[in-house]
Length: 275
Image 1: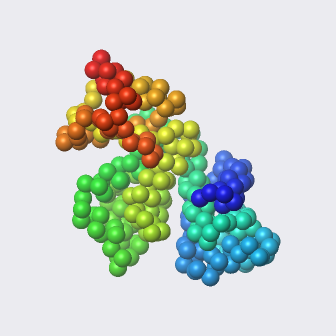
Image 2: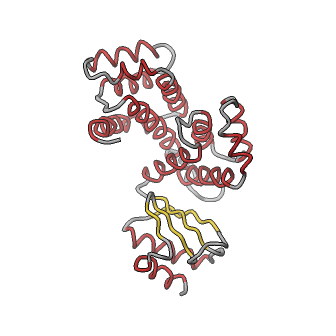
Image 3: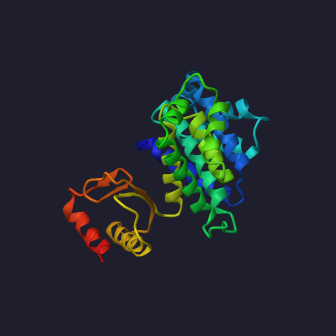
């Protein structure tokens, strides 16, 4: 998303911020529900992104469509998006998805207590999303089941919950959305996007690190410090073990991949891990 659509999304996120301290999962579910309605009708998407229609007209159309079916906050958020300008019909749906996800992330962030393992609600959400993707990646039958077009949304959500029954309520909402409405991409890719939004919320990036063998606590701490220094910010590090990895270490941060061939950037990390 770029240009006018990006500006409209930024404006919507700024307005949403005022609602987040008291946000609920129900609001997120309502926004995801509105997204489903928008995605189901090409004519509606065209009407909501038609540059010849006024913002007030488009906002009124949405509020008429969802009025009495969702909360005032959900109708207001959706109406605000409709009144903005969008470069393509797809962009307004993407924006709705981002706003709904942001609400879920804020609910996790607002948890006052930490879990039994001593981590925050936001970290728990990130970990749950990562664990779900790992579970899917390790089972080809599950991958086929989640991509089966004939399977119902309820069946896919039920399967997803069995894969990670201990997930937080916030994670269940996002995982359920990803498997039931992936919107043209793989559910795991959408879950990754949700996790990246969660990481961005706490001003961190996610680093997925693959190593040939498990690291000691000291090695992990050195790796964390090295990556933080390399990127100039604190990263959320998810570790996977791949014995067949060539080069000893592979790091992916966003779209950037560092492997053993990038000697100038990974040489320092290798020296730190060696002590």
